[in-house]
Amino acid sequence: MLHKLLTRAILVVFLIGMLIPVLGLLIFSIDNQGLFTLQNYAALFSDPSFQQALVNSIGISLISVALAIALFTPPLWYGYLFNTRVMRLMEGLSFVTFVLPAVVLGLAYVQFFSNPPFALAGTPTLLPFAFALFGMPYYIQAVLNRLRHTDVRIYHEAVQSLGGSAWTSFWRIQFQAMAPGILIGSILVFSIGMGEFTITQLTTGGSFMTLPIYLQVGFQNNPLTGAAMAVIGMGIAIGGVFVTLFALSKRNRGVRDAAH
Image (cartoon, rainbow, N blue to C red; front, side, top):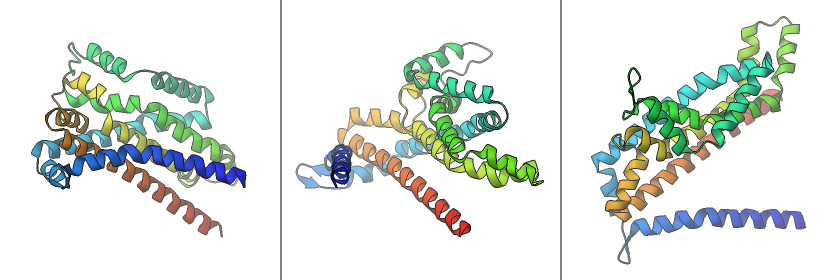
């Protein structure tokens, strides 16, 4: 009984701490000298600069997710099943990037890619690679946790002992085990791409308009519009979390139904 009460109390305190800033921004964004209005949101969505920033952020974030999946998933899969040294190397590199500040990563990109033949500083070309690298520890840990939790080695060996092909083992066992981790890691990388300001500012010089750049400019010019932008950003993040939870719960129900 005491354990349940303590758990609920901690949950309530956590929710209050999370909701107070959101409610404060929401009230501030719709306040107009004591009157509530959605004028700031209407002005925001009618602004071509905001529309372009939204498209840019979503596009760059999706490319970052694709890069993370393509660059990190194959070595993780190979390392976990066939060569633990590769897995340990990937995990070690993820811890290095985890403690690496965004400003250091941004400055490193600017210094390295400022001279020919890789003069890419000041362009958005570097952003997907930077976001994928910055999200590397979160993506790797999400996928590794799924591989370790499911222990796909045992199922892989069972499929082989029963005469199953390598493709059957990969598609029916290994990919299904990694899929939730890939989904969670992708959401985390996508969130970094949507919200990272420092790397974007340093690598592009602010010339490429994304939501964080637009938010910073918006707060300087019109704090109410900036608050509305912040509320929309948090709404996108919360929506992504709920979509992920829904997808995982639906998948788990499908697995339980198949088992019965």
